[in-house]
Length: 279
Image 1: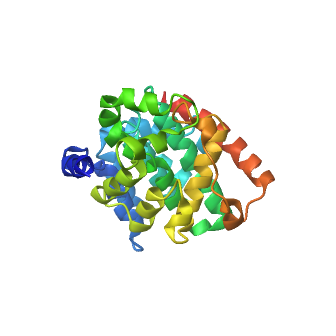
Image 2: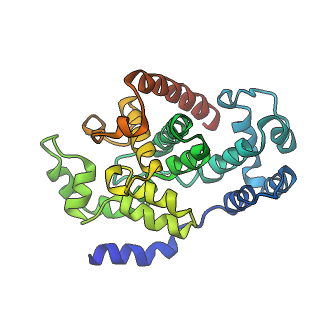
């Protein structure tokens, strides 16, 4: 596992969680915090204030053209939703990059991550509403491991192409066969660097196989949302059609097929709305 060890050692070179996101999450987690504290954090971060206002004015949040300032956004959106907007705006540049190893153009990973974030929140709303905000953030970060592994995958692209040439093997299996581990394992380590809570880190680690998570609700939520995003065509590679929903997932979450169809429709519409504003 020399490769994995080397990658983990080099993780100190990875970008830190944007200060504004860290600070916003810290404020929201405190029971005695208030909206003024949150607004104060945003207003001093001029680099992302414009992105926050664009997002707040998107049709996704239902405030198209009505938000004129961060202070105004705080009034119209509310405490928790403003925190979500800050997170989306703060990390959009990090997960919006081109990933040559995974054959992802600029914006592909961002679009998929948004789809899983939105889907996760919708599913959490049905299963465990109190997890809705955590589910959104975990969905946004679930594939962060690909950012870390991209250069290593690119260096071995011929091995990956050979392994997957019959069209029956997934990129996930290729990672495990060629690298000895997959992007979700690395992502869980990345989460620790970014001080992401353990429950979310665990969910991200097992989002492909939630049955191994010892009943972590968020792992099942992410897995279901990932499947819906893939089924919607909002995937992250050439093997989207090979993505399988693990047996027992729908039963664990208490979902029916009609629920999935409804969530899928909302996800597609929401991502289209948000992407039009961000780009």
